[in-house]
Image (cartoon, helix red, strand yellow):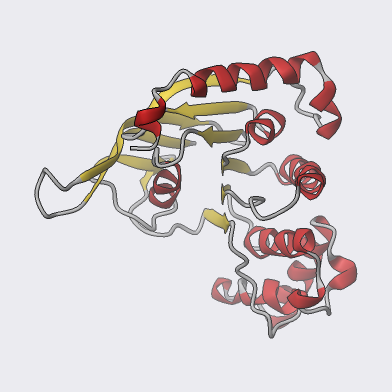
Length: 258
């Protein structure tokens, strides 16, 4: 469904000596309904990869396709959830979700129904008339997810969406994300620094090399698709996180911070 082929990205036009190559020859295919995470050392191009897939950045070389449609700009089948809170503080939860539906040409009644249905899906329906400032950090991030899900994207891109949350909240919202993913059948591409988070949430984990980012290895999770945070104590979970750490720690630390 999502095909990334020989993707390259170089920043800087002052000459080769000042150019920075963020990504080099990245190849990845993701099937419909898969949950795929991307991990790697800081500066390896994870967020750049996400921005290119989202159509927010143009690659220097290579391509990204949904089915046979090449991504060159933001695409209606792709929704993006960033780490930063993207809600409007002057709107209620329901109004925030409805705002994202305006471009779809729905009637006011349809927008209201779809917004409430999505708030119910993410567990925030009881706070539909609250403003973001009245919600906890975890609930605000659920609201951010609801704003994107309401448009029914086929692909959900998430760039460090839980980075600002404490560990317990990350686990709880991770369970909610897995439930939402199973119920909607969306395809998820998830960027994270957290090895435990990647191991718990993913069908497959893409391990990137230090810059320029390339695919070093793809780890297939042995955890069941009905997994929850209760898997954290299992031997299979420990095996996955151990393998991910071995992959990352084998990189030259001087390269990882270069």
